[in-house]
Image (cartoon, rainbow over all chains, first blue to last red; front, side, top):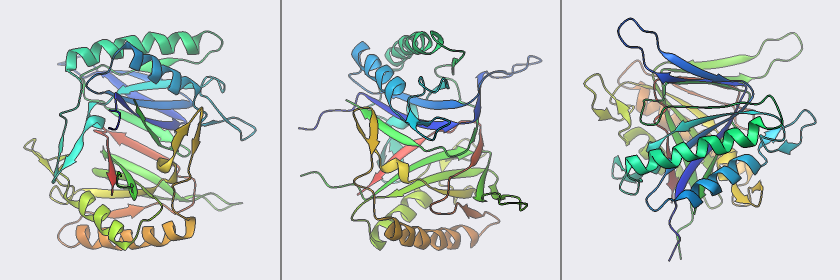
Length: 161
Length: 161
C-alpha cells in the first residue's frame, strides 16, 4: 500500500513577491505583505496531517538546498539569509477527475487552519534568529492575490508523507 | 506496480504574466513575451514520455476547468478565451533525497526539447482558432525569468501517466 500524502508543497525562488493579506473594503485599501529575495512556499495540508506533518514541512522548507548563493552553490533559504513567503493553497490537494478537480483528500478547513498557524511561528523562529531575513504569510482562507518576480522560479513540488 | 509519471505540470491562473525569452547580451536588451488573463503552465517531461504524452498534456491543459468566467463558473482556459503562457520547467522532475533534489527520472534534454516543440503548435491551434487569445512560451533550456500577477494562483499540480 502506498503511504498517503499528508501535505503538498510548491517552492518557487523569487527576487521579490507581494501577497494581499486583507482585501479592500469600502473606502479601506487592501493590505499586503512583501518579501525580497528568497522563496515562495505554497502549502496544502491533506487528510490525516498532524503536528508531526507540520514539523516535516518546516524541516523540509528550511533545509532543502534550492537557493543559489553568490558563488552559484545551492543552499537552503536559511543559509542564503533569504526571505520566505508562505501562501496557503488548498487547491494543491486537487485530483483530476475527468475535466474537473476534486478535493476529497483535503484536510478539514479548521484543522488545516490550526496546522497552518503552527507552521508560521516555527519558520519565523528559524529564519529570524540569525539574520535580517523575514517570514511573511497569507491569510488562510483568503483569495491569494499574489505578484511574483523571479529570475527563474526553479519550481519544485514535494509530497510530505 | 504503479504507473510511472511521464509529465509533471503546474497550472496557475494569472491576470498577466511576462517571461524572458532571450537574456540581455552586450548592448542588446533582453526579449520578453507577455500574456493577459489566462494561465501559466509549467511543463516537465519525464523518462518514457512520447508524442502520446504531449497529446495528453495538451488535452488536459485545454480542457480542465480551472478558470473562472464572469458568472463565477469554472471553465477551461479555452472557454474563457484566456491566454496561455508555457514555461519549460525541468526542475519539476526533481525528487527529494535528503536535503537535495535529484532529477534521475527527467527525460533526456534533447528529447524533452522535441516534445516541447510539439506541444506549442498544438496549443496555438486550439486557442487561436476561435478567439483573440494567445499562446506564448519560454525558450527551452533558458533560465525562466518570470513575473506573474494573479488574483489567486489557484495552483494545481498534475501528473500525466
